[in-house]
Image (cartoon, rainbow, N blue to C red):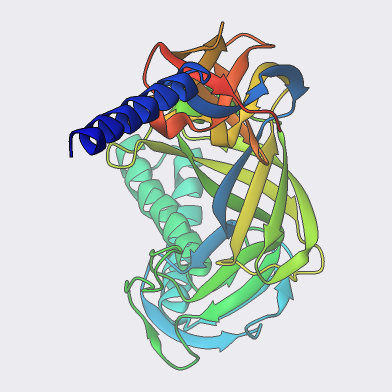
Length: 345
C-alpha cells in the first residue's frame, strides 16, 4: 500500500512538470487579432442627389375682372396657343351698354367743346362734361377687355375650368400643387419646365445659380435630361430647414409632364481627401460619433473622424492623415490603447 501511494504521487508530480514545460514553451497573449488596411489620399468629385418634381415654367388661370357668361372657348384642352391669341369670348351686353353711353357722351363733349371755343361756356361746365366723357371711355375699354381673354404668353391649354354657356364667377381652381387663382382656362408654358428640389441647409453653400444638373425621370429611366440651376429661395422653411431651388430644362417634344417625379444630381468641384474603407468606421452606440482604430506599434488608438463623402465602398473622412494603418475587421472587440495582433490577409 505504501509503495502504491509513492508511485501515485510520483506520477502526479511528473504530469505537473510536463504541463509546466509545455506552457513555458508557449507565449501567453491577450492581443486581439485584427485585419488592417491603409488610409489613402486621392481626388474625387462629389455629387449631391435630390428628389424633385416637374412644374411648368409659367402657368396662369386666365379669367376676367368682371363675372360673365362664357360664350365661346376657341381652343381645346391640349392645344397650343401663341401670345396674343383670343382664347375666350364672354357675353358682351355690358360692353355694348358702355359703348352706347360713350357715344352719347361723345356728342355732348363735342358740343360743349365748340361752345367753349366760342367763349359761351364756362370752364367749370366744360370740365364737368369732359370728366364724364373720359370716364365713359375708360369704362368702355375695361368692358371690352373683360369681354374676351387673350393669351399673355405662348403655351398649352391644359384645362377648361369653366365651360361654354356657364357663368364665370370668382371660384378658385382646386387642383393641388398648381395655381389656385380663379379663372376660365388654365394656360401652361411646357416647352420649358422647372424641376423643383429641396436643399438641406448644410448644402446651401454648395449650390448656386448656373450649376449644371442631370435629371432622370421615373417615367423615362433611360434618358438623361440636362438643366441648370436657375434660382434658390432666399429663405428656408422653418419646419424642414430646406430651401427650394429651380432647375430649368428644355421640353420641346412635351414628353415631360408637370407633376412627374425626378432624380436630380449636381456635381460639385473636384476635391481631395483621405479615404478609408466603409467597414473600418465604428459608430459609437447611442451617438452620432464615428471613429476608426489607428494601429501604432501593435496598439490600437481610437481616433474620431467625420464623414465627408461616400464613393462606393470607401468614405472620405476628416480628422485622419493618409497612410495610416487602420483596423478593418475585429474592431468590435477593441477599446482605446488595446494591444492587437495583425493577421495577414
